[in-house]
Length: 446
Image 1: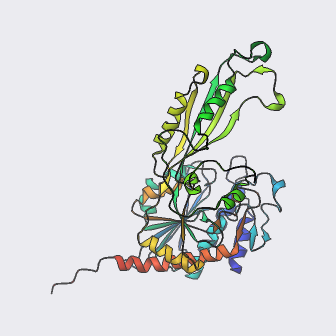
Image 2: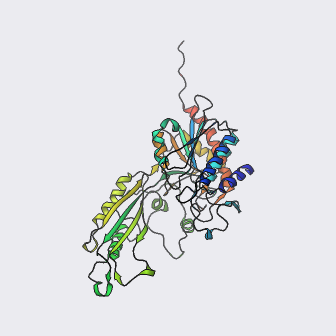
Image 3: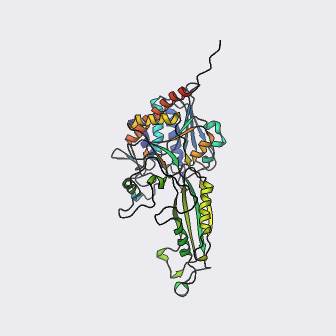
């Protein structure tokens, strides 16, 4: 752990932000450090994948130790989110700083802790694990890149029997967690134009159609009185796994104590197995610049999250159709569909899942929980298309309280340590279970 902590601090000190406007040199520096650490850990083949407009991808390969051993693909990313408003940080975001039980820095949980967990597992096996290993370490996950669609174009490179996506973690510290679903996402723009230009609200208000008022009426139809999404055709099902308590969620979401939570049903259903529509942007006159005039134009950008198994184009079409059907005060809306990405639901019950459940219990001392997430990892679907028969496991060293993408991101060293143990135990259990499940060779009749 002492060596892993030191390497995590080295990696987290690099501001590897692969967003436009940020320097490319730190991204390359993080790439080079990952390559060096993997080679030192005994990975015999470490290559670089270069794609247009995309930070380099690290690809590593350890051949299976025996012909009947399975191959496991391990995924993570070395880039990080921008720090945001640094005045909200308790310490400089790229100076790894001790906190009770862990370390604070941007990207130290998402996703550099998981890369270090892979490193710890490789060191435990001295570079000779009981399975074949393929490592995929992306350099532009947070901003998005063409790599998301690359794996199906080269399926042999990504062929495997199981894959571990370590870009998330536990529901809460000390609770081993497997994520089995990711909600899909899409964006839709809706706008209204009613006048050629603003007109005096005293002379024309009351009869001249206010574009902002029209838009607000349309947006109000997206939810019912309880706060549940009211758009027909968006899939919603009960959630059977573990979820947050109301108190945990209020604290995580920083909801004021005197305000209710939106929607009905379990939190898991509202957050993971049902839809959510959020107004993420609004173009209208600002309060400080407001004039006494009827507003001629208003626009809103909507983000829809939908059930992991709903077709993304169908989900977007349902939202678009609903908005087009709205004509507040008889005025039509202009609705423009935006980008969409599919959700993902993992198959459970296979040998990799059995091995993971055993490994997580060994590491944390308690049975694993199942959750989903409203976030998205676009590459998961690309990898699943490249290796459609592979089992997909999502677990890692982060936890829901680690402030990922927020100020004061932190990782707990106990979670990192347990993740290393779980990764190593998973490979051991999976190799044994995989061999046991294979049919015995035919006997020579002679």
